[in-house]
Amino acid sequence: MANMVNRALSALIYLGYVVAAYFKGAGTLALYTAAVFLLPMACIWFSRAMGGFTGITPFVPITESTPAFFMCAVGWLLLVGAPLMIYLIVGGTSGLTIR
Image 1: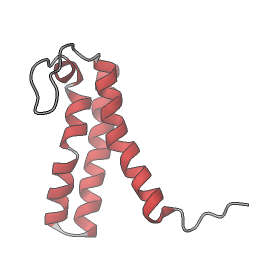
Image 2 (image 1 turned 135 degrees about the vertical axis):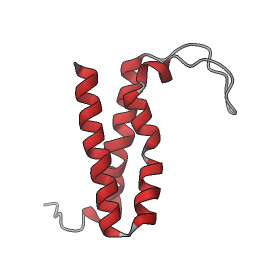
Image 3 (image 1 turned 60 degrees about the vertical axis):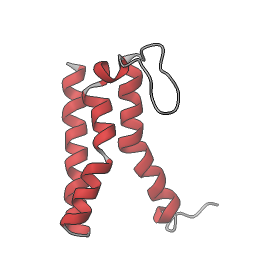
Image 4 (image 1 turned 60 degrees about the horizontal axis):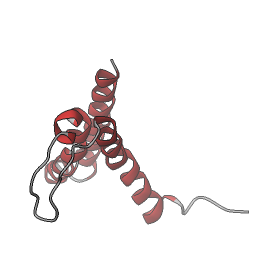
């Protein structure tokens, strides 16, 4: 059940990003946005399979599997957390006043 909720919510957010990019820039920006968010989507949708990967990578060998819930959490961080932090750093804080 939790897997279905994760997949549905992440698909809605992903489609929202792609549609917003299409209306903001054009088809090229929408395709770029869709490509950028494929890794977070894969981490959420296929967390068990991606967490089970062990082997040689270009940087460091992976000797043990990663828990599926951790892969899912990383996917959510990349899908929602990173764009939110970028928005707040780049220009979203201009309207906020700290007293």
